Length: 112
Ligand code: TYC
Image (cartoon, rainbow, N blue to C red; front, side):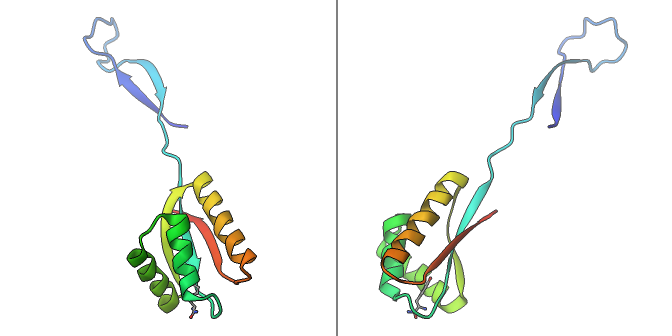
């Protein structure tokens, strides 16, 4: 952990050095974010992928269709960026939904 010196204002110190550390405060760190990736396969129906993007990622039909097509053409696309807990939940929901419908769709997450 790193510490930021906080400079004393006024200088009523006897010390000859003008900058006196009077307090330390831990620098705060933003929690890491995770990208959720959707992978292409040859079997999952396009409409099913669109449904997943609408249902679990709150995208409208046009946005969902566009991302589905990007995955279909390029092999992979980022569908959203979330905190670790939210990303884990969404990946689980997608994988579970695909498995229950017997589609081989794969969804993963990776640290940004
Ligand atoms: N390639 C699939 C098909 O032609 C469609 C598809 C798109 C599958 C995106 C998975 O993440 C995916 N039916």
